[in-house]
Image (cartoon, rainbow, N blue to C red; front, side, top):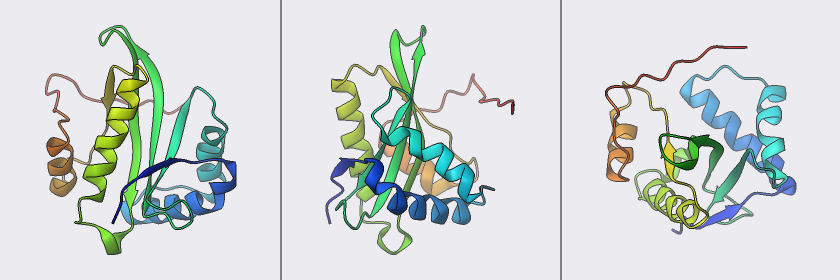
Length: 149
């Protein structure tokens, strides 16, 4: 099974929204159809805010990745957040997420991105093992804090 990445385009919106809905339901993220579309649709037009990648065949994706871009003085330039990753439950455990994250990191490094960050549930040991295997490192000195606006 291939984890080949395909940059999602506006015509992929219905497929992606279905996957996002499944991911949010599974992980307990409280979202509405409107908020999911507002979060995904602007990323499909090739703008500078971020990108959505379909994992596997574009017609029947195995999952998706969302990456958003920022700037970091600490890291010396553009950085990004792996905002969401989802693999359909029936095909997990086959190395697809590992391969997709590796491909994404190589692609973004070639594009000049200096660092990638992510947030992981402190109780999700499986996700933490995956991210450790893909060379993400815990930054014990730092805590992600959020203020809703």
